[in-house]
Every structure is written in C-alpha cells, then in structure tokens.
Length: 75
Image (cartoon, rainbow, N blue to C red):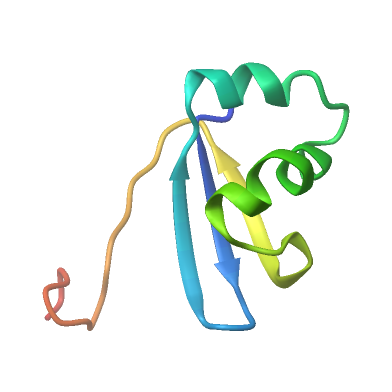
C-alpha cells in the first residue's frame, strides 16, 4: 500500500489534520526505514504538528463521514 494520505489526531488540542502527500513527499518517505522518522524530520515543521502529540495513520485512499454534526450526514 502506497501512503497517499496522512491523518493525524492531535490529542493535545483536539484537532484532526488531513494531509494529502505530494509526489515529492511520497518519494522522500521511501528513503526512511520508519515512516514516523519521516514525519518527524520532514513534515512536523511544514504542517505544524508534533509527532509525540498525535495518533496517526496512512491511507492509500481517503473517505470521510460526519455524524451528528452540523452539516453532517445525520444532522
């Protein structure tokens, strides 16, 4: 699975950050043995997050749904 998206749940500020990785970021990530090292060294400053403050996942494709929120499916 090639990571195309990075989803971060910042538990310190209650924020969800959705990042679509650029082609350059995808190539650069392959240079790292550990994706978390790549995040720490290449993405933290650019996207203003701290790896130690987030839960994260990578996805090949992305979809989203919202429930019981204004403008959501169940609103």
